[in-house]
Length: 378
Image 1 (cartoon, helix red, strand yellow):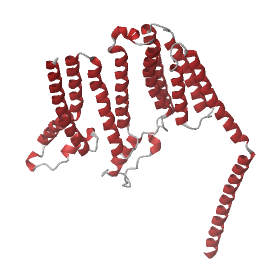
Image 2 (cartoon, helix red, strand yellow; image 1 turned 180 degrees about the horizontal axis):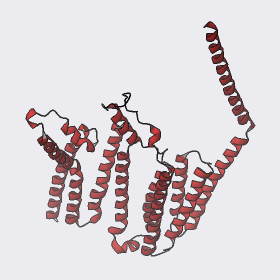
Image 3 (cartoon, rainbow, N blue to C red; image 1 turned 60 degrees about the horizontal axis):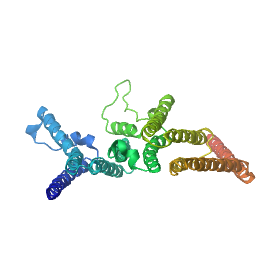
Image 4 (tube, helix red, strand yellow; image 1 turned 90 degrees about the vertical axis):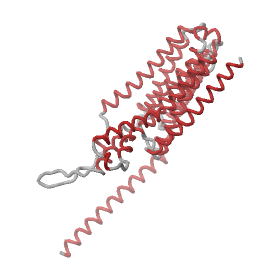
């Protein structure tokens, strides 16, 4: 027992020291390239090198240094994986080692993504979205391992039926909500990253088009970067298929492993699909809900009620969930109807449109009088 404690202390000391040193080196490199590791090679190449290194050998040297920098950037993740594997072999408890590997890596990726987001002035970035998605996926994978892998085939026997149903359902519905959030906040379709790249190329462009009349290249048009409607629909369709696939795997996995109410996973998945269809129809079809955040809040709340009453009173949770969604949609419909039929609001809108038309008429009259006066002076 004392020998195991000494090995554990020695392993944690070595791994912690390596993680601190390599993490500091990784932080310094990423800070130098403004938290954009894909610019490491260009940053190294742009340094002031001696004249005897200019030429083909400079490209080879920069490539080697770029490879070393990349190894330093990813070295903290490698240390975490090694640390977790070592803990599993020493302690014999998978849950602690998996926490270091999965949860530690997820926290590191989340830290990198937040710093990158801050360095880009909180603008939309594809790299930030990918890093955050990987971090959340690792956390969900760790939760799934905590339920199944650590307990093995005896997981349903080690946990109560309601606790097992809640644990598995929380993980599955949380992953399902990732796809729904991406669908709701799909944006207007403009590829901001591509537009920024095109703008930089135009700003630093030195070429001039040769022709009958020399002219500078045209600046990038944002309208050219909007995807086609068919492409956007296919993207939304793939996201929704991904959410359905998560529910299918959840239904099958719970049905094969639960010792009571094996069909409850399939019923919960069907309820989620029905509620999502109602929310989607009212958000996009009838446009009853104007706030996307409100729609996601209602969708998340309905999922919580679906699973929080366990396997004994699941029908009560389903009834409350349907009642919550129905009440929100009914309130939105009534609010929209009152806003349309309100005579004061209608009179205000008519007065505003009349004022706008009068201003346009006066502006045209002034322009005509000024043009006629200028012609008379000529």
